[in-house]
Image 1: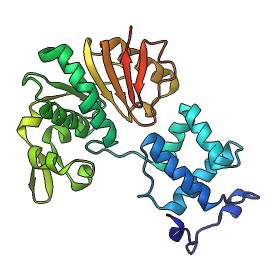
Image 2: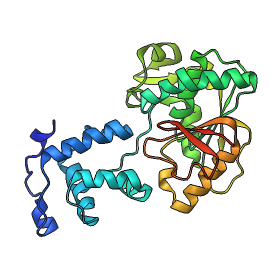
Image 3: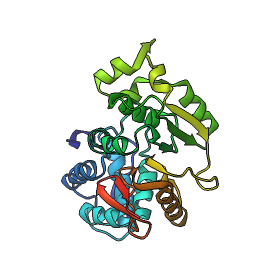
Length: 284
């Protein structure tokens, strides 16, 4: 898969000189790791320069005194801190419509219909840390697909005024659309000069507001909270407090939709239960 990209480039130091006695791990192990990462967490590293990705990961493997990619995968599975560090080192931070699309289809087909049936016109959703708006607009598109009552709105918040302004504008580049089905693009976007404009029928469902997750009060009695790839930036104590507050903001049987690497290890303590990967339900 990656082997043609591993030829050493002029001026680039080899792993042994960088690590001392460290010997570079086999490419086959790296390829296994990349496949497992995509399967378990929805992270696709194939768009990155593999020789750089491999080198950065092996620096982390050595840091923890490990000897294989399998050892490092086990560590990622058990430590939020290590996973956060991994993401920071590889800068795996992208915003796009329907990121991890199979999870959005689970939301559309299995979770939203149940929540809408229970709450109807009183359905309340929050996209926390919405960045440039792809996430709440993705949710709004699904509400349109499910013919949710017209008054059903999504609260979308972020701390960054520039991001909120971009989100309110609702204009996106092609790279943001890679996971968006063609039929959704045709129904919910206008394409002009190579840019994708969110149609008013979608925009009207989203209310954008500035909000600091660490300081400002949270809405209550929510049916759905979508907060993905935001919590990874916080320290552990702040992260635990944030998940606790999310749980308190949900109605009983409300759902929290998190990012691909954001597992809640103390979910029982805060009244949540995992119902499928990336999704937690409020139970008490």
